[in-house]
Length: 306
Ligand code: 13P
Ligand code: SF4
Image 1 (tube, rainbow, N blue to C red):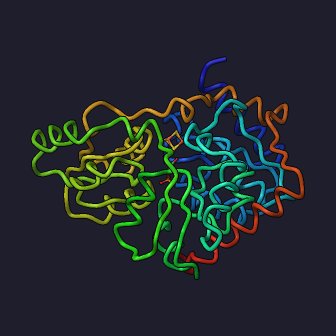
Image 2: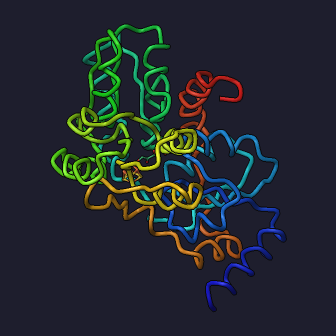
C-alpha cells in the first residue's frame, strides 16, 4: 500500500472505531500530519482526559501512553509500537526511589513524568518540563527528591531555595549535545534566538535565551518578532515549527538531536493499532491508583486554560 492508501485506511478506521490520534511534538512528520492533537507531555496528558472519544491512539513513547491510561482508565489507550520506550524513564526503579526516601524521610518526591508507572506510584507528585519549578515550589516540603532527570533537576534548583536531592539520570538525546556545538551554531546564526529544552546540560542552558518545554518553544516562536531560532531539542519539533511558521527560520544546535524511540511509529503501525488494537495499555489497578495520585497532584498546578 502507498502512504496515501494507508492514510485513507487510517481515516476510514478512525471513524469506524470512534478513535482519536494524539501525537507528541517529536513524532515523525508523517505521523504529525495525521494527528488530531499534537502537543508536549503536559498538553497530551490533559487532552486525553478532555476528549470524549473512548479509543486513543497514542503516538509517543510508553510513559506518555501510560499517563493517559492512568488519567483515563475507562478509555482504551493504544501505543502503536510496543518497543517505543524512553531510556531516561528506565534510569531509575521504584526500589531505588524507596531507598532514597528511607535516607531522606522528610523529603517529598517529585518525579518527572518521563518515568515508569512504578516510580510514579512511589512519588508524591509528577511534573513535566513545563511546570517542574511550579511543582517543586508548590509542595510543602523544604527538601525535594527529584527523579530521574538530573539536568531538569539542576535547572529547577537554580530558581528554588529548597534543598534538592537529584537523581543522576539523563536523556541521551539532549545530554549528548555539548555547549561547543551550540556556540558554533550561535556564531553561524548571530541573529537567532536560542531556545533549549531543560533536559540539556547546564552549559547549554547557560547559552540559551530561553529554556522551554516543546509547546513552550512553539508558543514562543509563534509570538516572537524574531525571524531566526536555534532549537535545542529533538528534531521532530523543528518539523512542526517550520510547518506552522513558514516565514521563519529554524536551525539545529549543530548535529541534529534524534530520539530513536520517538521515530519508531510509522503510518502502518497506526493502521494496525486501529485494526487490531495494537498495543493496548494495561496497568494493574493498585499501581494505577497510586500513580494517579502523583499525576493528579501535578494537574492541580495547571491554571485553568493554561
Ligand atoms: P516535553 O514535555 O517538553 O514535550 O518533553 C518531553 C520529552 O520527552 C523531552 O525529551
Ligand atoms: Fe525520552 Fe529523551 Fe526520547 Fe524524550 S527525547 S522520549 S526524554 S529519550
